[in-house]
Each structure stands twice: as C-alpha cells, then as structure tokens.
Length: 117
Image (cartoon, rainbow, N blue to C red; front, side, top):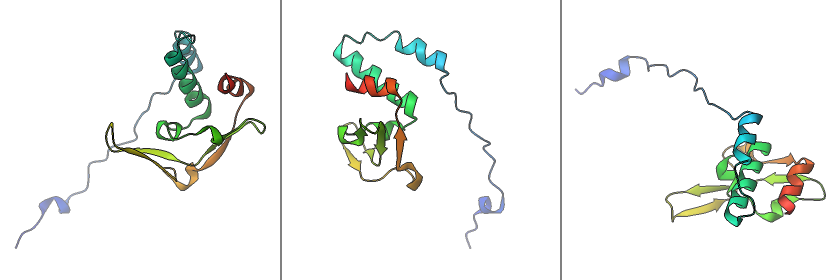
C-alpha cells in the first residue's frame, strides 16, 4: 500500500506578503522624467497616471476601451481584464479577477484632463 507521508504534516506557513507601493513622491519622481512630447512616452505617462490614481490592476488597465470612460460623469467603468497566455496569445475577458473587481471609479479633474489630451 502506498502512503503519502507528506499528508501527515502541516504546510509551512508562508506569512503575509509585504508589497512595496509607490508613495506620491515616488510617483512624482517617475512621471517627471517622462518626455510627454514623444508619443510612446506620452502613452506610458497616461498609463502610469491611470494606474496610480485609480488603482486598477494592469490586466484591467490593458482591457480598458474608450467607451469605459464617461467624461461627463467623470467615471471609469472596470468590467473586463486581459488574459495573457503568451506575448502573442491573449484575449479580453468579459469579467474581472473577482466579482467585486467589476466597479465604477470616480475620476478626479486632473485624470479627466490627462485622458482628454
């Protein structure tokens, strides 16, 4: 009879993961180094701005469409996420990581202006 001896012991506790977040100063240091007159750098600036100021996950931010932004109500609707299998194999899913991930985020005036440019 085969017996798995590992099933007789408890798992080693991993503890809580400590994640470093950018402070406002960290964020400002980074965005001030971006040359926004360059098209590609401008896209990076907008992407970082939206991520930092809304808290959307990267896979949610990559799945945003312009129709998800309501400029008159100053809202961003998050209801999709990008699922990546490889660099060339990805698709946009009609749901977020969790049920609570589907949400509407109020946008501040600065974010609205940056998205309009």
